[in-house]
Length: 281
Figure (cartoon, rainbow, N blue to C red):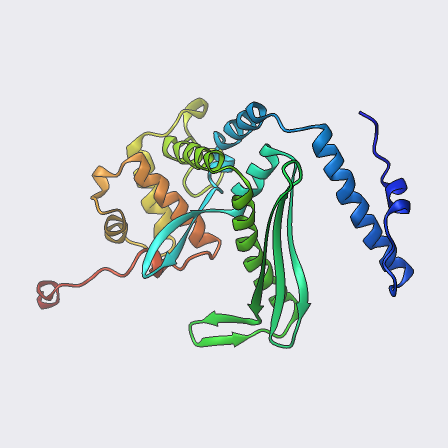
């Protein structure tokens, strides 16, 4: 395959009028880079078998599986979804996909943004434009954002959500479903790394911890956030002695989501109900 000279393509790219020379050059460079990426994608088409192997290797690693899901509130319940980390990794494995998000314009109280994902080989494009208000919900109500840093953080968070959806719209459904199932299997299997994520574990030669050890670790890890064993049992619907590897995988996702601020403790583990009999004691 002949090497593609981006500088040559820049010189041949159309130059927008009415812009500064620097802006015109950068816009021409962007056009040339897209043209070059399309040519590379056509010259080096993806190998589906290789992409699938790459995905399977990645999703079998705890480091990936541990970041593949997050817990979030919906209609008064805690549900689980896949993360932007998994979406980006699947785009890398599948190949010949470009994606991103950015701010189109900013007003006094809101920003207009766009997220997109493009399969260069098939010329399939998923693009979403959306509005991000410059505010954040707090316990005391709504807080108006004034600093660039606060606005950027909210915009980046919303942009990542839309980007996850855009990448998911480009990738084959079977590819995403298989990846999510493999990540769940990896979380269910567990490993020597403690639920808290610190260190390399104390098990001899990296052997997986016993189910009883993992149950105890889960309780200890969530106690840091004032979550009781009773609340965990209410969340899972079974007593601690009956927790399965799948239950522990759910708790691992919940814990990481709480740590990263994706969900509040009370949204996943509501306070225990006190019965009339208990009050009378």
